Image (cartoon, rainbow, N blue to C red):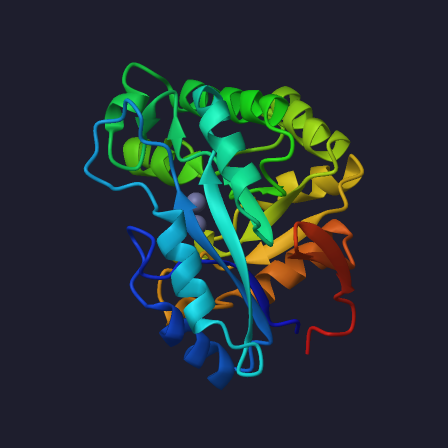
Length: 276
Ligand SMILES: [Zn+2]
Ligand SMILES: [Zn+2]
């Protein structure tokens, strides 16, 4: 199995626990050949929160101080919370910094942080809440071009739909949201961007990584080629967690390679025959 993790948060992210060195030591001990730090950058303008914005200069300094490729190879990435209204701020940030890899995610959606602010769901059925989220993903995918390489945990909203509505909806069913999901996936493909398999879905009790297999299969059917795999680790022991599930899903959906990003360019690595 390829042991390359492209979604990792250190303690520089507001919700990260292990520091960079702890991740590196764990990676080395567990035969992880390479991983990418993707600290959180979210624009909190207008959002009621006490979370501080990532200090990119401090992040780069810490990264360069810890980097030691002869010990374990690491890359300098970022997970940017995309918001339509943050375009200028985010495009400047991307132009001013040389990242290896950028995950674009929707965390704050329609100006609300749904992980902490349940008013995002107020007055909405589960179906409408999912649409509210997917509409903004679509808007981001149309607006942003060079500011992301893959879209992160593309069915993220399901975590909080389950939290708010219980068993009323337990997954984002491709058939129920076919029209908008196709539009999102086709826009991503047309822009030569990709999606990730984010195994933290298992950790969050969804019973599957993000996205679920139905969405992954459709991405492949539509001609999607670029897939990265990440654990979304917030502590070192979570590195490459549940990657065996991700590789089974890849195979089931018809993919035989993953993309590994360096300097914002994908290198395609075959996964067939490397699972055992
Ligand atoms: Zn995220
Ligand atoms: Zn993350």
